[in-house]
Length: 327
Image (cartoon, rainbow, N blue to C red; front, side):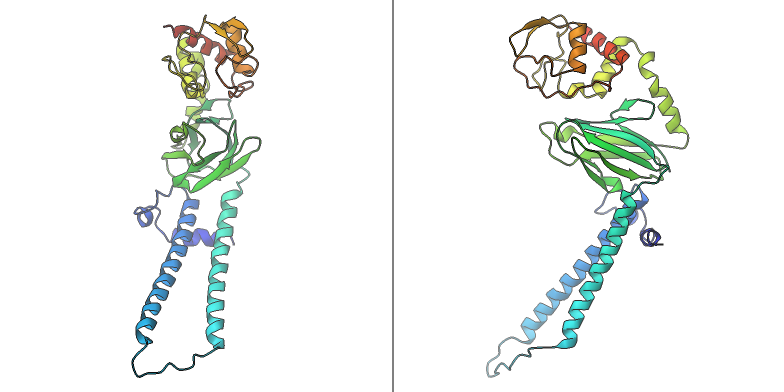
């Protein structure tokens, strides 16, 4: 009964038309609850601002000092007036708290049958891991099914925000945070990072792709075997674009957080400890699995490990792609 009241009240507000002027599209029913409460608080604030402003102007004009009229002794106490301005704000605050708390609990506690998707935030990309092991830079979900996101960060604090769902949660290294939602219509919705996380913060966006009935399962089956269907170098290029490599390693020789991949394979590199080595298959594999083992001189040890995140065949195709990047 408690949870149904905000939902009924939110249903009184049309999903799109009422908020199209100043708020994004309402992508979920929970977004309607948030917007209803926002409009309630806004309406109360506007009403009391107008009331106080009008009364202030009226009292300034009505009780201004006039020549020949002496000011009387002001009253010191009015019991019913004091009760009124205490009780009414108290009731308003209780109502706001009630709807805010119940709405928060609805958005926080996911149903037991929710589809779980792992989310990793890293500079500067979101990565979404699906039940079949596929990792994608965009969030794909089925329509009309609860989805629970279990999120963590590889480096700094990120802010996971879907404006259309009114969902925002900090993604913190070393711990897990969660959000859940249920989208009733197929479509696409933008994802932002709301915590300034460095140079590429403004590029850290992704899409929520909501598939029509039956299409999500079909998509998951197709992408689960996508790497094996592509030529090795082409598959490696796809992983370079989708698994966070491009955020720190350029392919045109330009400077970035990590060494450029252009002409890297077969090149002689000097490590921080002064040792020299040739970039071959074994070095690349070690750099992916244990990136802190050997640091190239001039660069900081900021790369996270991909141990357990990339399969052996995925590392192999990445190596094949790097072999094609010749000067």
